[in-house]
Amino acid sequence: MTFLISATYSVVPERDVILPPLTSKVLKYVLEGHPKIGSLVKSAKKYKEISIFPLFLRGRYLYSTGPGVMTLRAKERASFTFSLASEEVDPEVFEKIPNEVSTPYGDFVMILEEIRMTELGEVRAELGHKVNVRFETPTLLSNKYMVPPNVKARKLRQMNRLLPQPSLLISSLARIWNSIATPKEVIVLGDSDWTPYKLGRIADVMFAEVGYSLTPVTVVVGKDKNGNLRKTRGFNGWVKYEVVEAKRYTESMEKLLGLANFLGVGRSRGIGFGKVKVERV
Amino acid sequence: MTFLISATYSVVPERDVILPPLTSKVLKYVLEGHPKIGSLVKSAKKYKEISIFPLFLRGRYLYSTGPGVMTLRAKERASFTFSLASEEVDPEVFEKIPNEVSTPYGDFVMILEEIRMTELGEVRAELGHKVNVRFETPTLLSNKYMVPPNVKARKLRQMNRLLPQPSLLISSLARIWNSIATPKEVIVLGDSDWTPYKLGRIADVMFAEVGYSLTPVTVVVGKDKNGNLRKTRGFNGWVKYEVVEAKRYTESMEKLLGLANFLGVGRSRGIGFGKVKVERV
Image 1 (cartoon, each protein chain N blue to C red):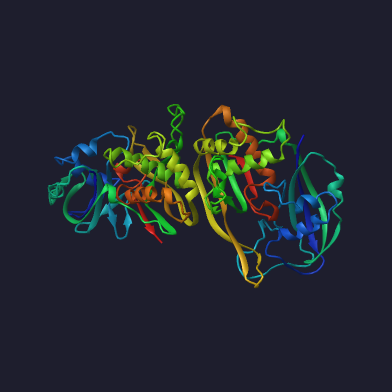
Image 2: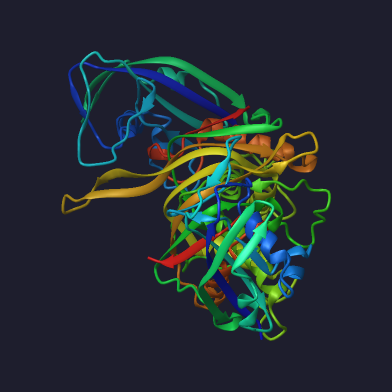
């Protein structure tokens, strides 16, 4: 049985700190040293079972969109969230994160504030008649999510799609789901290879936008060897969908969108991209 | 052989006029009385071969989004465009639109300003590396455009999708294309029933947004029996796409987007929705 766990910590720096452009790196550094979680953080798995979100301060997530620096003042309280999927649940995992951590970015006091947990098989985002999807951090959806499995996509150039097409969301989530699910929990529609693609196709018919506010955003992810900023482009905002009743598929969609409320959606969740909140309207 | 023709007229009212909420109705009224075009305007064809766009005044198309009225002042010069596909080209068609027209909305002087014409088989919007699609009037894309033909969609509720997914654009255009093309001109990928769907699927992989500005918009389309406003919801704005090279499909995509520059895209083009401009960047 797979569990989904989401933990939120408050974080207070001892002194003023200059944050890295991807603020999730601070928490990532702490987790890398963790006896159990460290290996998940470092794994090169395609559909990672851990998502580490950016520092959250005064109602917004902190990430860099340009050359300026971001700072956190001494004693200023921010928070961090990470989510993971695991077959074993051990509360000690979250207690083993020390209260006082020393990182290359500075020293922090970290206090566990909240743990959410559910069984994968039980997770749902209720759809109802309308559902709202808020992209809380820039989201990266690959054009490859909707390549049918009988097409060779290796040669195809990977690009980020900047509009949250329902098929891209659902195909991404189905890939994540089936990579963390036990054999009893997997979602299969006919053939398992075709499932993300097929559910994606259905999502494009089941969900129709009734309102939105979306903005492309370029995010700094680091520096290259020559000191130039490395950037990637995603989008931010929200979409409200009207949902067509399709009883055969409603449960699968509710499961996948429920998963999104833990692990987010799309690429690079391990460094903070793709945090979403799905809520019935 | 099918021809695409687009005609633009300047329109000047004799006296101040109050315009109908769908300003295309003024030109529609004139064209309905036309010996040759009248039947096209009135036809109930699903993928109409004629598009009648709203009145264009000082750089913008006029349509109503609320209860207020739109007016055109006496002697104020606006313009109108309509486009059609036809197997016969007779310049007289455009000259037979009288210079002085009397409509339920007022009397106007109409002068032919421009005619664009091309053979359907020759029309192209060159893709290059990047292409910009500007939605100049609210655009209505149906969730049904991407239902595969082996799924019964009759029971499925029709909804307008408010984000311009490449698949929806291309599927809509392929349906229009094949409904106006002669047997030699049709675009077929394997099976003709599956062609709009398949080209749509390919478009979602070939085109990736690199920038956009999009807004949902509610448009007044008339009044019901009780005098309440009838409305429909579409979107406005622009999207810039990066194009993945896919030599096998580039020509079909260029043809379909070239068609869009004449007839527009989506539903209700006959009353002014879905005017687009596709341009290589």
